[in-house]
Amino acid sequence: MRQLIDAGAIDMIIPAVGSVLLAVWLAKTSYGSKALDGCLPRANTMPAYLPFIPLMIWIGSTAAAALATEKLLGQMDAWKQVAVDNIILGAGAMAAIAVTLYLARLTFAQRLKGFGLDPRRIHRDLAAAAFNLLAISPVVTVAVVVTMSAGEFFGGEDFAIPRHSELDLLQQYQQPQLRLLIVVVTVVIVPVFEEMLFRGLFQTVLRNMLVNPWPAIAISSLIFAIVHPIWQHWPALFILAACLGYSYEKSGSLFRPIFIHSLFNAASVAMTLYGST
Image 1 (tube, helix red, strand yellow):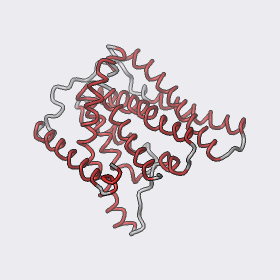
Image 2 (cartoon, rainbow, N blue to C red; image 1 turned 90 degrees about the vertical axis):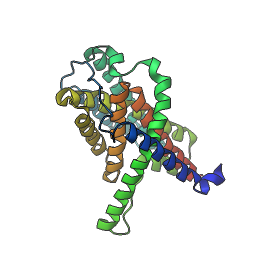
Image 3 (cartoon, rainbow, N blue to C red; image 1 turned 30 degrees about the vertical axis):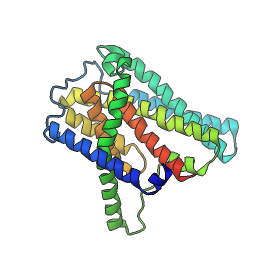
């Protein structure tokens, strides 16, 4: 298997399979124009400001915890500081997840089921998420190539797309407990929080106002992209977010975009760990 990967077979197979799946989707949906026909808005009573509540709780709690730990713990080894930072990040996200679930229970007509969290859908959504991610992978790749080409054209041959900070930390530090912590935060906690926030809340609020699902998907995808600090990632993140938003509207299940997001992050983590061995 390692020889196949080193030979580039995986790099050829995944885009090929994804291109076939994407072509089938385009053919079945009249190039996407009929993809969301019949998808009704989720019944809810959310005010427009509601998505900002868990967002502010996450930002506030992580900032406060970082200041408190800095004063209480003082200087420590670099890898331990990274571990503390990830614990704070994960704990803040989990607090925001709890608040989001509470708000969803209050404002969606069918409570968490109406929010898109029906446990009976998990097995179907996990399988569908893998196909959805494969189908979008060629478009994400094109976005990366276009970003690189534009960057080299305007910024010169030295232009490079920086790696996500968590992936850099995975490659930089070898401690197994730290790596496990980063993987849990990156692959499990962050996807759950971000999908509940950006798809479950922001996209739903936007659809309440815009009715048509595509503008709601586009705006929430733009917000999702630009809140990430590395601007070179924005085109690919926008494409990924559009797939996440579409999957939420099409399936009515929040588990599907959560699984797509988690699988995407897991693939990035796996490639990083493979490259560091």
